[in-house]
Image (cartoon, rainbow, N blue to C red; front, side):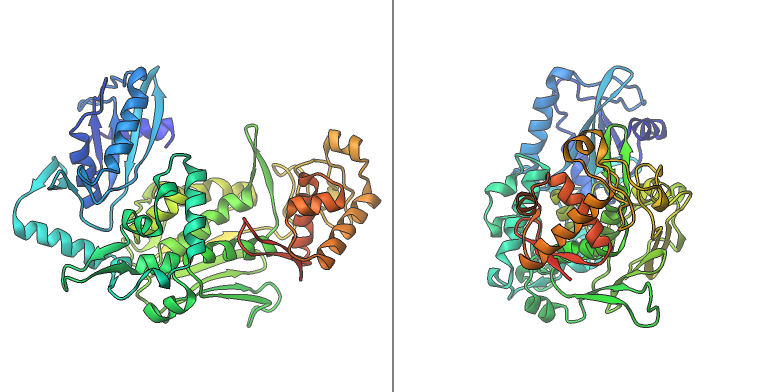
Length: 496
């Protein structure tokens, strides 16, 4: 959340999705009633350090670490919030005063605060005491989300243990003190709200979300026979396909396979955002892939597809629409489709707050392809169209195919381009046109003879830096000569 967006929230004032709290020296206890109400209703934004009349009082800077620590511990305490829930927070400075921003997504199940259930309307938080209203909340939560379907006979043997280890690693990378690091696999599923009680039958078990994220392929075939994600390349053969990946593994595996498919066919484009080097391709398509996997309506047999055409990438998935028509930034009203799965991806660092993915697409698409705009359409079928330039490459649009490459971070190399790896690497390694091609050919020979090596291992054999090897790997991938197989921790490169 940017400072500008925070100011817009404050100017808008409190409402069904916005709440202000002063909380100057210590965390206001009433914040938990609001968190509980937001989780049970439509989610929302909490600003600590702002009065009800929109006056920014700020939070005592010395108290911020203690307030954030209290929030994290209390949200992980089932005696306070049941079931527990992990929230992201952010400290922002406005006019020299510190504000704590807390984003609360809509949850896929009911929550209580110290045994009391809270809901939200335009007037604020209110406690639910009427049994009928409480029942309606439970039914609304259960019926709204396919991901919450309970399978009483699913057990831990139906899940892939390696995916739990990967989830722990990614969560701890995203947040060093993430509690998943010390949890058992069963505890992770419970904390992620993927073991529930079906209020209609009284049976308890693991949910469809658990199966989708961790299930073995035969488990998924049993609980959701129509489940698959189809990745197609139709650059040359538009009637059938040039290449295809029929993905039926769990969502964590599907994420990596879809990103590998994208990287195989789409050009890289480096960009300097301030002083930070980013990959525009990765920034855009991480959001595209996450959207395809997270916001899909899994109850419908309509297949989710990602198709690469000559100059566009199109994704389609069945959807439970909240609106119909094209989505722009000025009419964007994000709603969670599968909150438990979305929250899980958020813990891994694969997505951020609701709606941030679409904002990133609008931000980075014009940089990936000059003056381009993503086409995002919501209906029964949710459709994304992302343009790309087959000969795209270079740094901040400064270089193209005919200019050669003269930047260490430029990734638009091809067989005919001279290679200089920036001033330092150019002097130290003496890379010129002929040597650049020889380096690439030598790397290909190593991969051909020793399939499965990672970047570090290849760099040692080639006698080059990791950065150099990574650059030539991108060239070989763009030429369709090599591919990456496996997960990042243990996988390696193979000749196609």
